[in-house]
Image 1 (cartoon, helix red, strand yellow):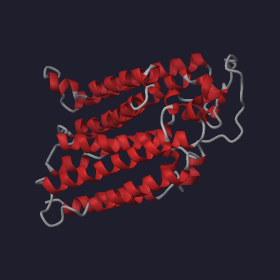
Image 2: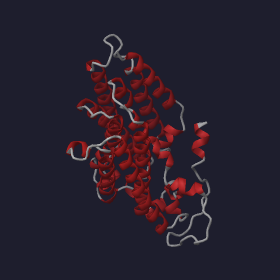
Image 3: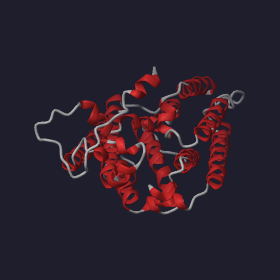
Length: 326
């Protein structure tokens, strides 16, 4: 089912138009064009938001479903707002890219003015929904620490960091990978905020290592595609050997960090604390294998969406985690 679902978001023969040519005002655009513009499939990255949920529930934290729904929906819209800004800035390079040229802005299916307006609207709506989520979650804005870790604070940090990344950081070697990891880490912190718990130092370290692994995997995939620095300046400095080493290293640190957390956490049963480590190890090894084997022929997001194993591993992790808790 997932492979067929993934094909719905692709256009094999798009109508390529000059970037300067705008669509007619009375043109009835297909809703699928705008869904591709929003990169709805990339919302799968927000699975990081759900990772703290089992631990929060085990501690007895009170979860407000309405706050969680508002917060997650707002962050998804904020994601799409940033993606559109990125597409607008990269439209000329994307137009020459073998696969990115099919994106709505690069192909001319959506005009620049329409893309900018939609990005602005989605950004405002996203921040409003995050604000509603914080309100229903009982955020105390007089507490500085709580305000920074509130939903609007996390959303604003995510948006500003993405603007900095798009304008400058993505051309700086290694710093671009750190920022990509930061975006995943902010999703994890958002999940903690929605779950009503403060993130521990071990959770942040493990989460950032995992996020860094995914970011390095993305760069490895781009470099392996053979496009080099033609479409991304920082790729001219990387080497596949260095990225592969960093890829494996960050995966190992993630596994060790999670294992240490399970072993030392009072939430875990003394005899079954290691159960949930097994699916984590399987998932990390499988993701590494798939990215290396793909050789840049498919993006990591599409790789995950087009496979069944992520759902199986995630389900196994949840079951083993719940059974290993006190």
